[in-house]
Length: 305
Image (cartoon, rainbow, N blue to C red; front, side):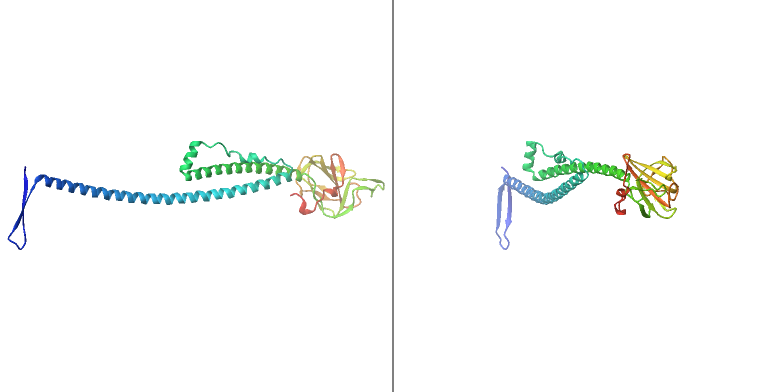
């Protein structure tokens, strides 16, 4: 067996100390020292890893909390939008009822909602509330998208109906065809020229010669010609069985087959035909029967542009 021998001299003394140890003890010492150093290094590395893990874990927890808060905020916004859409649907129902349209089925407005939930998904939700909130947010978004699409479709339907009605309304006489005083009403009267009592199928509006005469509604000129009784006159077909006639014009400014719009000048007041003075003879016919034109003259703020 080999030994390791060393001598230790004591300071201030003539004595010395000899130490003799087996070599295997030194090998054990150095091995233990290496183990301790390695252990300390591992401990240091582990402490660093723990610190890093806790740092990123805390950051992840903070980010998750922020994400949860943001998802909840979006959820609240969607709930508010959902309530707004419901209010719009109620307003839409009132508009439908006002125009006599069929109200949409409320159940159809909830298309794409509900359904059976996958048990596996329920398990995932139980371990990840954030994922559950995100999935719920996605479902609410889909529901809201369905409502928006349906509301757009309803808007298009109502808009088309209103445009159609507006076109119809523009074809209904609703304004005075000229300015002036009402000289003769609708009904039986003594003819100013012939002197006999007969039906007066319109009204007379008197004013100066060349006073403009306007179409009282949209339509197509059916006739623009001279008549022995009405003089220069224009007849306009407005569709739906409605026709208007304008007589005793000084001159007409339209031709047969021409489309005219409400307020468009079609001629000028005159005294042609069987007339006792400058005036417009104005008639309104509905389904082949003369009616009182006064019923088709609305205040200016009520007329359809």
